[in-house]
Length: 636
Image 1 (cartoon, rainbow, N blue to C red):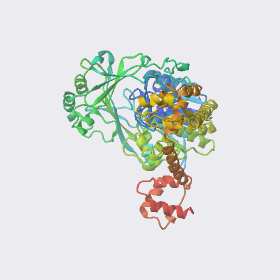
Image 2: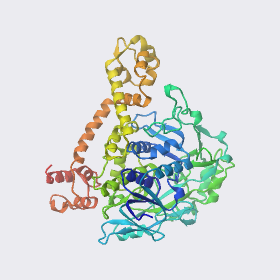
Image 3: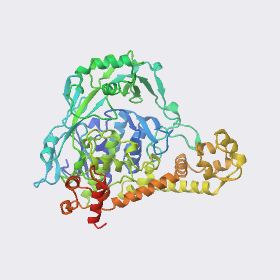
Image 4: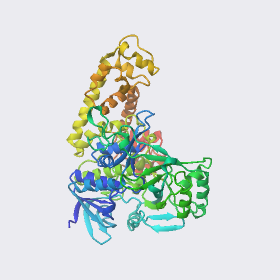
C-alpha cells in the first residue's frame, strides 16, 4: 500500500471526482479517499445536470478537459435547452440522467485514469506541519496515515451532518450514511471560522403507483443536443446527413408536470408544529432559490398552487424524484399531502424527504486558487465552501485539483477571471464576497454573460487547458476547425448577396420587409425573426454554401453576426476590467503603510488579501476612493 502522494482528495462527490481527475491528468499521483466506494459521484439530490447558468458551467468543465460533460451525456435520458425563447446568453443546456448509470460511468472513467488510487475510509484528521503552516497528509478512521504534498477537502454535507425528518434527528451526511467527525474541530483549532448550512431533498416515490394521465407531459427537445464538445458522447446524437436518428424525442424518457393545491397546503400546515425548520431545530440557512415546500407555502401564501416536476431516476427503475417537493416534515404528513396531488392519489413512497444540516467554512478564507489562506497546500472545494449544486461543486473540484497539482509541481497557478468563464465568476464571488446562504449560480451573476455563452465555452477555454496539458489535442483541433468554419460562414454572409426573387416570399411569410435588390446575406440574417435554419429552406445557394458545416458551427456564426455590436461592447468593458486584473498585489503587501486608507479599508484588505486590484475593487465596503489610493501607491 502506497503511503506517499502528490495530492490527496477527501470525498468522492462531484467536486472530489473532478479534483482527482484533473490532478491525475496533470501528472500528479492522486489518492481519492471516500467513505464508501459504492457511492462515488452519487447524485444525492435530483437526477439531472445543467440548467440555467449551471449548463454553462458543465460546458466549461468539458472544455477544460473535465469529465462531468462526458458522463452527463452518456447517462442522459432526456435533453432540453432551456431559455431558447430568450437571447443566446441565456440558453442553458440540461440533461435528465440515469442516476445509477451516471455514478457507474464516473467510477469507470476514474478507474481508467492513470495516477488515481482509491481508499475506502473516513478522513479523521489532517496532518499539519510542526510549525502549523502546512498540510502534510491525512489520518483515516482506521488510523492509517497517508502523506501528501497537497490535500483537497470536498466533504459535501458530511461534516457533523444531521438529518432532520419531523421531530427526528439522525447523524448522517446522506440518508443511510454516517457523518464525518473531527475535521471541523481541528480546522477551528487551527484558526478557521466555520458555520452551518442546510439543504433538503424531496421524497422518492414508486412510479408504478402514479396516474400520468392526470399530469402534463414534458418531452425533451425534438433533436437532442449534448454537453461535451467531443463527438459521440451522447446516446441522442442524430445520424449524419441530416437524417433524424437517436436524437428523436421518441427515444428520450419523458418527464411530467403536476401541481400542488390548497388541500395539499392545508395538510402540510398540520405538520408545521413538528417542523425542524419552523421550530428552530435547524440553525443553518437553506438555499434561497430552492426552498422546501413548507417554506414556499409560507413565503408565497397568496399562491394557490406550486409546480412539481415528476422526474424519472433512470431507464431501468420505477423510482421517481418529485422536484419541487423538498421537505423535512413528518413522514405521515408527507404521505397524506402527496396523495392529494393530481396523479398521486395511490402514491407509494420509497423514502421520505429530509433536511440535512452540515458545517461549512466561509470561503473568504480562501485564495482565488481555492487554497486556504491559513494552511499552505490545503484546498477546499464544493459544499464545504457554502455552495449548492453538482455543477458548482464540480467546477470548484476541477480548479482545486488543477491548482493543487500545479503548486506541487512548482508551476504558476491557474485563475480564471470573471470575463473568461462562469467558473471565474463563481470562485471570485465566493472568495471576494463570501456567502452566508448556499450559493447557486445564475446568469445574472455574470457581468459579461454575452461573452460567456454555453455555445462558445470551447473557444474560450480549450486552448488554455491544452497548454496546461488537460484538454487533448483532439479537442484543440476541433476548436480550430470550428473557428475556421464560422469565420468562413461569416465571410460568405458579408460578401454574398441574396436574390429578391428567391427569398421575398419567405420574408413576407415571417412579416419582414421584402428586398428590392440584391442584398448582402448579412443584412438579411441580422433582421429579427430570421434564422439561418429557416432561410436555407428557401435559398438553394445558401443551402449549398452551408452544406459542409455542422449545426454547431452554423449556430456560432449566426450568434456572432446577430449580436456583433453587443458582443464588441462587452469585450470593450471586459478589456477595461482586464487591466485591473493585471495589477497583481503581493500576498504580504503592507496596507498599514498607506496612511490615506481608512481603517475599514485596511481591515478588509488585510482580511481578504486580494490577488489583484480588480478583486480588491469588488470587496464589499470598498469604495472607488480606496482603489484610487491603492493605485496611486502602487505607482499606477
